Every structure is written in C-alpha cells, then in structure tokens.
Length: 214
Image (cartoon, rainbow, N blue to C red; front, top):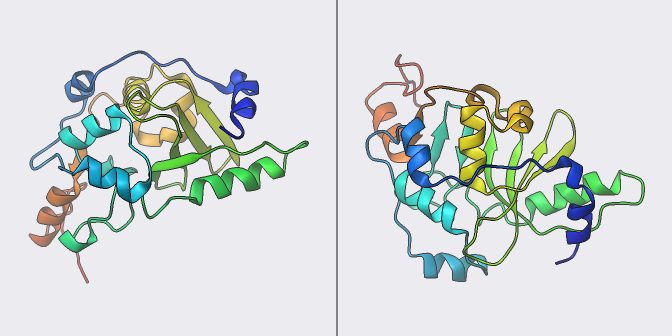
C-alpha cells in the first residue's frame, strides 16, 4: 500500500490498544432504545469498492450510526438520508481524509507519502476519525486528524479498541481528541432514529430540554 512505510516510520505515534469485544463496549456504553442499523454488507462493499472491518460491522449491529455525548458522530457506511437520517456517511466522505493527510504531510520536510484513509467519524471540534485501509475482516488501525494540533495521530488498535480505550481512559494518547468522551464512566449514545424521534416530540436528547426544529 502506498505510504505504508511512512506509517511504520512514525511508530512513536502509535498507541497499543487492548483486545476487546463489542460486549466490553456494551458494558460501559448503553446503546439506548432503537439502537442498531442493519445493512446489506455485500451491497455496501460494492458501493464502496471494498469491505469494512468486522469490528465496525459489530458496532453497526449493536449501536448503528449516531452520536456519543453530542460530540463524536459515528458514520453509517452509506447515506441514511432517504430514511430521514444523516446524509454524511463513509461513502460520502471517501477521499476527504486522504486529501487532508496529503496536505498535512506535504507541509512536513520530505513529505509523508500516501495513505489510503477511510473516515468513519467526526467530532464537534473538527477532528477526523479514520482507518488505514486494509483487507476486509480484521480490525483496521485507527488514524485521527487532530484539528487543533494540525497533525495525524496513529493507533495500532481497531475502532472498537479505540473507543473502549478512550472511554475507559486507558488509551492515554486519545485524551487530546476525544474531549468529553475520554475517561467517561457513563457516556451516552443515541442512534439517529432515537435522536430523530425525541426531537420530533420536542425533546433535546442531550439536554432533556426543549428541541427546536425549523
């Protein structure tokens, strides 16, 4: 893969994640009512041009697309706009992270090669949560663009390990990007369907107060 050597040579930026399962995430973050989204993963693979890692598929089955602490949005693989959900998705963001990486790498002495980066999430502060593209199946290493520091941070763990390590506070390197999620004993998650339902009833899911829609 183009640029893989560059990722390896920046090994000092890698954090070692613990090997965890979706059950561990379910223990520390309640999916809330109506969670989980089902997709035809063969169809998703054809739309994207590649299959997605198993831990992401497990997350979609258990939680689906939605938000954590009104801060981090986890993207669906393809748009849910026709169902009233978010249009932003992995498919719609293809190429965005790679472009940002090339721009940042080009500003460094000697450049930074090329990495195939796939964005799976984004947060309130503009940080981009991505994978380094690998073969489908096994968890893919996580790469995060830290917007305030204007740099990429690489993690040797997959998406689930990254979230569990960040929520539990054991993944120290993620503290600068995960904001209110990092070391949070009871993070809240709302699937897009539950978020939509609550807002339609006039309730802001994050504050419990009134939700104004226009």
